[in-house]
Length: 160
Image (cartoon, rainbow, N blue to C red; front, side, top):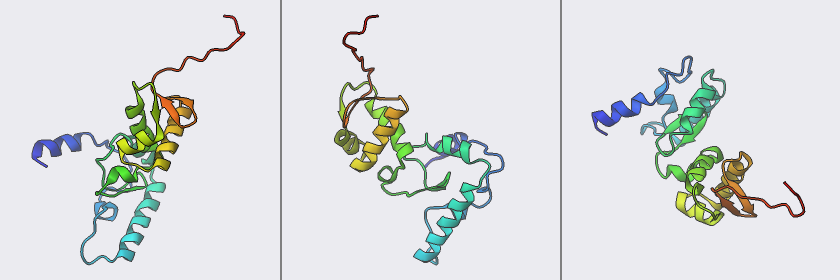
């Protein structure tokens, strides 16, 4: 990463007044030093997640994090983002955002297409599609089939 990329990345981070992670970056890092055992890392990550859960900036942090698809590492907004293969570990809310972007403009998309395109499990893709459809961001055409284009429903025998 060069200076321009670093400045750009830092400029997108919200201020998050009262965030409990301030001045505690090592606790929230995904990576660990050689002296940290697997058990110690697990405990550290658990403590970091718990701190996030009670943080006064959690909602704003989570809103920001959900727009940082594939860019995060460590514990952010109570979720652990691993540096390797990060998209495969998306929670369903993040996956729903990625799914909406993928499905938009398509008239017919199935779960398998989404899972393959986003490199996520079929289960995560199905849950994300369902969440996005319930939120009205995409349309469920039939079981397992979704559309980013409006679906016109015809009611037989109903006059306008």
